[in-house]
Image 1 (cartoon, rainbow, N blue to C red):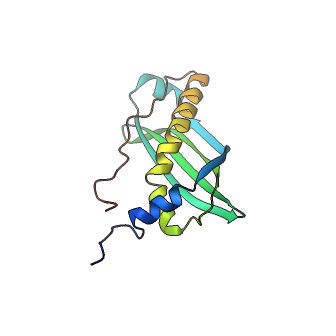
Image 2: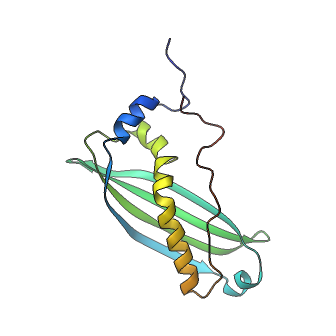
Length: 149
């Protein structure tokens, strides 16, 4: 009897593709920043990070993934901070990066991979802007509403 997965890829198939991925390069290719400095310096800011990823291209053993991010800082229902941009992440791979694989990869493995880069970027950007340091809060990496098996 087949198992019922909430994703369209089995854990075994996911692991098979994942084991073939090896980072080739990672490049920040776009960055925009806006801030109400006086507001941010004087008030607590509630941070919200949104990320998404898509497959840009795949050819000759290389898969390029676009990783988009937007960090929003809210003060009393008002947007006071916004940092957005994108990374190109190139992987060497033997296996094809499928749509089903990417659906899970961007939610779990890619978030784990990219979080240190985002933490460093946000913190350094805030320090160079003479703002209080932006430190990402702990993130929940495994949504409670979805399961791999």
